[in-house]
Image (cartoon, protein in one colour):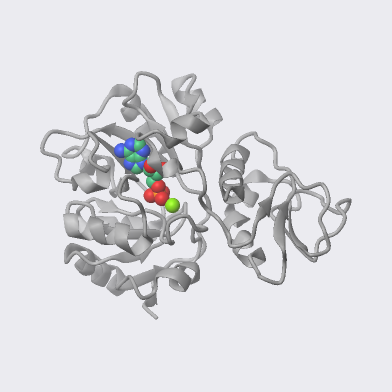
Length: 317
Ligand code: AMP
Ligand code: MG
């Protein structure tokens, strides 16, 4: 198995592999990423192939620091402000590609825009600094399946498709980045994620959220309706569970009836804790012994918006 705990030597080897066009999975604070050199068409194509990801679904380019984006995107004032406030961290900005931007057009799915992010995870930071090139890194899972928050999750589905998986503990945020479109006339959240709407609006005022239809429009093909899906059916807003269902709880759940087994996203009803547990607990409950995964209601505020977005998509077939 190509899993290696992070160390300076492992980071140096990973950087060499990436520069040679190979794929390396690495931890970020959101979820584990499947990295490839974003400026290398073949490496980007290999990412799509490894994940079975439709090539209409563009990738995020990751760098270690703000200045590293200058050759790639057209800055504007809003982007500068957001970068100062939220980077490094779980926010992705969609901006116009600079003329002669060296990032593969395949990473942009042929569009004139590029999604960019600066992750805060120390291993991601060290790796990106060592490579010195933008790294395209979608979640390190097969397309449409549950995202990985540990190196073991990555190994379960991709060990024969990557050269190396760097282990760096559990992803602390546990949800993908918020994807914010700064190119369209109105600023719009294309994907809710680790930075909440409320946090963004404090800094830049009102932002829109893409409607369900907009999610399926070409600008955000990543918002394919069914995604993050376990093998079992997912039943939302459960106020009780059948005896052959696995129950995913939120908050004090003593009053809930039934369930062959249960896990609690956060017994004290904390949305940050729930986000960090979401994908790992869905994996744990995704067991053929049960008929379905029933999920208790989760408030739509703060990180709840992103948690519910993932759960709704997990529930679609
Ligand atoms: P993932 O890499 O799995 O975290 O997904 C990346 C997300 O960013 C998907 O929802 C993509 O559709 C979205 N994305 C990436 N690049 C762009 C872009 N240029 N324009 C709009 N959305 C993008
Ligand atoms: Mg993904």
